Image (tube, rainbow, N blue to C red):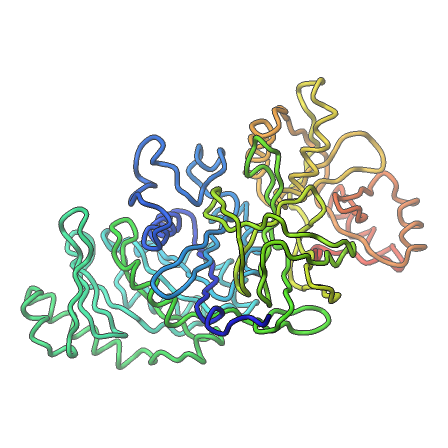
Length: 525
């Protein structure tokens, strides 16, 4: 059965990206609250059990108060179904974010009103730009003092080479923050001053509507009228074509902590963000309205349920109408995979997916058969592109401090490697594993997770290595290379050959002298 056009048009699959502490997790919580997925507002700031953000479900995330792994959440609001992918903000976990961005059709960039565009925000924006992902901007924390709105718009234009067009405009800031004017629908949105009440919205007939004079102080309404006239004179009008081409970003203002502007952001996603878009495979483009089911694995998560040592593959459906019980072909192995228990997610919580459509994110339980980048189809041989693994920047040897648990270490490390939490290398010479990561915090998180989830205490030691490179070439060339560099080669968890360089001279010399061998910093999964 071909996918229903109505079902496709209802869906919005998007990621939230930001620099740490811009309020991404709080915004995620409030979006879920509006979608009815959670019942408690302010969970991030509450105490005890209530303090656990629903999108931060790992024990280490709850203990540290940071997101270290991407999580998927599906919810309905009004007439739309949203697949929200919350990404790690910390740069040490950016690889998980890069892979997650392969599974979305749009993104929400969260900026702190006081700090504007920060380093990690810029990096993630560049990834979105490379992938052609349309971007909506949410300027957060208007309940605090920050930069002037015009200065933030100028920073977006200068730093990102992106034309900003305000979808709303703030009235005051900090303790004088009164609300926003909805520029798309000519509505006045006022902050609810009583706890538990929602923001008040009044439909206006333009800036000269006396409703503004009745509800706002004289100075505030005068400033609003001046600002909006300037915005409309200087900023481009919203254009769907420019937005979806990645040349323009609609800008919303609000305070996620105070629940203000979140409803308007959701409405903006429904109105402006694209429905499921075509996906690219080596063989061809896959259209969401095609009848046959196709999808790709963009994330593996081990131990979502520590009691059962499970592994769940997160799959972005690219086309078709998936139904529980149907069988798909695992293209890499040719095996037939029956979907007895496909899942939908709310972070760690899950439910059976009786059906799903293109654009949805579903979970497939597996026991190590599925890998990041794998394609699932109804029989067609497809290879999806652009799902990367990056060469690690830090390398250390790893061993357990409990000799009785040594034989279990291999299994734990390989499961962590399968989900992309780290690169695991088994040298041809020596018994120790080498662990490679992008950022130093990953070592700490990896040690905590393996201790908590597998009961194996770890320690990391210097490996005397600078970096790693995947090597490829004709089989005869690779055998010759391996023989002549036996002490410096290893195998990753997928069985691919890796060169481990001691220093820059070692790397450069080997690359120059190796004949018929290619060295790569990035590997497509």
